[in-house]
Length: 280
Image 1 (cartoon, rainbow, N blue to C red):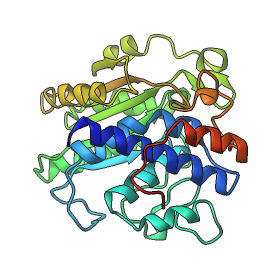
Image 2: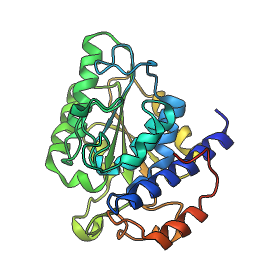
Image 3: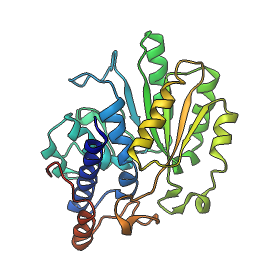
Image 4: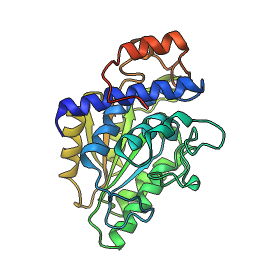
C-alpha cells in the first residue's frame, strides 16, 4: 500500500480514537495516539491473517497486545481492516458493548485473542504462542506490543530470560518507548535504565527506531526485524514514540494518558487531523 494511503489511514485512526474517548468521557488517548503508525503498519502491511477470524490462528501470524489500555487504537484499526463493523466503534466503553476499555476475548470480538487489562502479562502469552507455532512447524510470526512503563512488572523479565534460553526466534516484540506512564515520566516513577543493554544482556536481538511516529520508519524497522527471524534469538524493537502524537496540546506530557478531551478540545484535535476516510 502506498505511503499516502497509509498516512491517510493514520489520520482517520486518530480521529476515531479522539471521538471514541470523547463520546464516553473515558479512555486512554495518549498512548493510543502514539501507537497509530505501529498499528497501521502492522495490520495494513505485515500481519498475515485469514479473511475470517480464527482463534486458533493456524497458519496465521498472531498479534498480542499487552498494554491493553490503548484499546481505542486497537479497535479502530481492526474495524478499519474489516474485523467488525465500523459503526460498533460508537459503542466504545458502553454498557454491554464488546468494545470494553480493556480488550477481552470472552465477548467474541473478532481479532482479540487475550484479555489485556493487567499489565506485564502479554509477553508471556506471546512467547507461549510462538512456542506453539514452532511445535506445529508453522513458519508464522508472533508480533507483540508492550508499554515501556509495564516493563516495571517483574513477569516481563522472567519471560525475556525464558525466550532467549529456549531460542524462541519467531517473535518480534515491540516496546512503545514514549518514556511516560500514568503518574509521570518513567524516569520519575521507576527508571528503566538502558533498555537496549538490558535486552542484549538477556540474549535478545535489539533494534531501535527513533522515528516511531513516521510510518515509513516503522515499516523499515519491522522489515529489518523480519530478516533476523529464525536464527535462534528473540527480537525486540525499541520504538520511540510521542504520547498524544498528532494533537499538539496532548504531546510532551503524561497528562493525557487516561483523560478524555472536552467538546472544545475535541474540535481542536480534529482540526489538526482533517484527512478522513469517513467517520463511523
